[in-house]
Length: 132
Image (cartoon, rainbow, N blue to C red; front, side, top):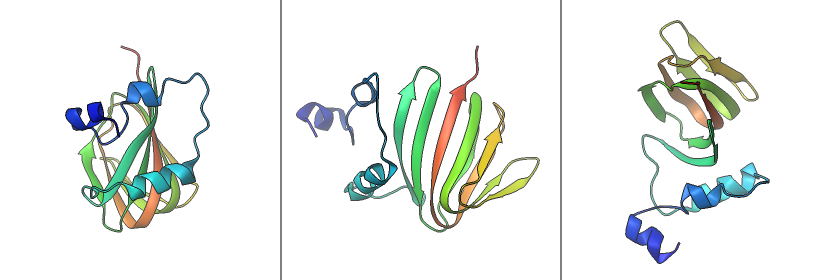
């Protein structure tokens, strides 16, 4: 970590630097190892790191402990939640969706949802911001 990162209270390199390359290979296992080696604790039973942020597209990698959660929230864009492993309950006003490994849930913009880890697991969240 650079002295500027320490001064800004940042945990990682600024996203503008992390996502600057015109071509990137993202190794999820390497990202996982880096995330789990960070010295700070996870919050609400999970750790997360943005792995891509370009224009309207954001991807975030999550590692959940059993019982970890993301309380009710919504996004101004199309959301996909890909369960890499583990098992997740994603609750909306309309349904409770159980995601097992290699399942993807798609939510339209503005749908409020909650994510609960039913066992330890990893997921990849993608948000594509709606045009304004």
